[in-house]
Length: 401
Image (tube, rainbow, N blue to C red; front, top):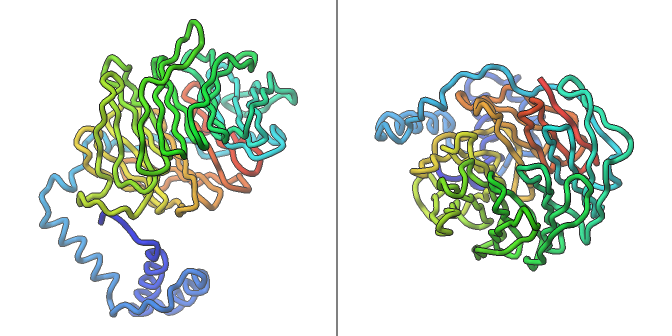
């Protein structure tokens, strides 16, 4: 199916309860009903055997549909190597006095954190990859004009870009925290800033329904807007493909209340779209709130507000795989990232956990628990083989193997 309604969780619970009772699992049904009592939709009364009917219809559809509809590329079938993060190796608290909403760990062990207390901080992390600890004092603390909502470190490691609630994009020296450039180029919150892999382009996404693509002068730090995209709704997420601008790099953009995923060619600044609905219709039943390219650039992954992540073929737009298991509704702000091997995915859930999927099987292989409130950002550090996450519990957790 291309979409699910807001009532699906309640309907599914009823169908499971019905199946258990109709097939002689009365004790299991009672236990399930007790645990799911807040979810069961008592007004929904489906015909007997509805769950089995749905499964039969799905099986029949797979038999009669053209083979290419359900065909998955071979590189997505590679078995996992078990080299994924599964345990906390350090919880860093008291870094900020308020919620931490952005985090990034560099190869040199510098950890950058952005908070709604209006500060960007840098810390030195020691002990990686076995343990994670930090000194009490920050390398620097930079106070910005408004609460920080997003950050991104330049590929060179020399600069940090931030976006804040005032609509401003700021560039800081990554070693000292000194502000070196900036633009007040949005009318509302800036929810994402991202650098192109070559570092010559910075993009920002805002709730003012625009995405700005900016040229960055590395030698004399400055930003120049080269393209302003106007969207149908709030711009929720952006991501650069791994190629350089000259080699056909693209910027992926997701927009609330839009069934399309937008891809902007960074050389020509022209756009194309992928219809995120499997059947090609224009109905909007979910929002893609986070987006990324696979490490090899062949696929685009969108995290939605309907409990699933969807993987698309970047060229054809075909919907390839769905990943279920995280809990995220339209009030959520899901975040995700790839393991660099492309064998695993990490994504946040509203129950304060991080789910780990094996891509080949779409099965959850681990559930990372440790945060006590909403998780707002996560990033995998290939240099250290660790995952870092931050959230509304004012802490950063480092996860290792």
